[in-house]
Amino acid sequence: MQETADLNTAQDAAERERPVLLQVLPALEAGGAERAAVDVAVAAAQSGWESLVASSGGRMVHELERGGAEHITLPIDSRNPFRIMRQRGQLEGLIRARGVDIVHARSRALTLSLEVVARRTGVPFVTTVHTTYPTGNPIKKLYNRRMTRADRVIAVSDYIADHLRTTYGLDDARLQTVHRGIDFSIFDATAVSAERQIQLANEWRLPDGLSVVLLPADFAPQNGQSVLMDALAKLNRNDMVALMAGADADRGQFREQLEKQVSERGLERVVRLRDRCSDMAAAYMLADVVVCPTTVPAGFSRVPIEAQAMGRPVIASDHGSARETILEGRTGWLVPPGDADALAAALTTALNMDQAARSAVAADARQHVEGAFSKRQMCHRTLEIYGELLNSR
Image: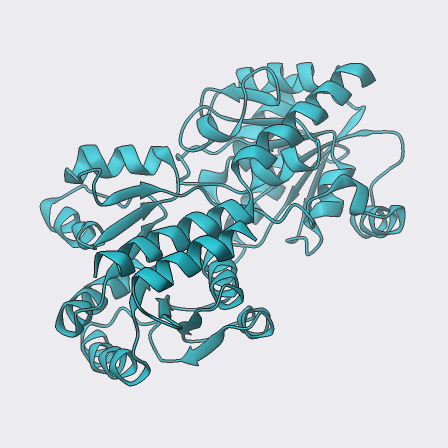
């Protein structure tokens, strides 16, 4: 593979037979940072690195180890300043004992400890910035700036990269955009059996013959479930079902609010609130359109990528990384954040498409995301950055 050849060249230039990578993050439960860490760790192991990930553990550890990387359990999921000081000693001991060549921090809380340790040990230091942290006061801004002091700073989107330039004055010599990527062997319409779709449709109690609008996101105000509710009330259509599937972000309080809105607006026949789905590829196959009506810009969201990979049109708020992942008018539509009227209009357009239009969107969407947002590209570019740092030594 090209990735392996490129990495071997970097290894030879750095005169290292098997360089050691250490990625550090609080836990490996679920989320975009965790997914990227596991994907890169496995790719590094398969490319000849000794690939280590330190965290407090979680459900993704098995996948990591199955892919050939090694997990090291450390109690590093705390924000307590005294515990952070203890973390510093533990991390420095790990780096020296294992002869680590690259340290990659994927958490703001851990960056201060890792920066100090990396400087002490002389190991190149990489950070990944996944979101725009609050900068409401000088102390917060100073706290956030630690993410920009690494030898290389990876932004998960151009939106994040622009934020780092304008807010913190980060220079392009140390800044790299590496979009997150997905596994196209998983998100492939031809790979999802009818049985999987039927099983999920039965689990969700979907009625036959109705169009399906899917909003896959945890139940939280910023994810736009209330905006979609307002749009559905304006549409006043009974030929569709709107599925909102996700986990509770606040012990169920926001979901309870949504349930009240469903009742107050008379949307019981239209809206379904469901738990997070473990088979998202099948979920996308059940959908006629996928919506991401976030009220806060996302650093990077995988949902538009996954949906387009499955050939589904996407409607998203016109901010954040959605502007980089959706081709306006070709693979989906961008609407003003919080604008229920615009969302209702876009839903009408999407639901009224004929089969020829849907087929054209599906073809464009798959081609678009395959060319720009693959897991292989993400891992390859990240390993390139590691190789460049090894060469610079």
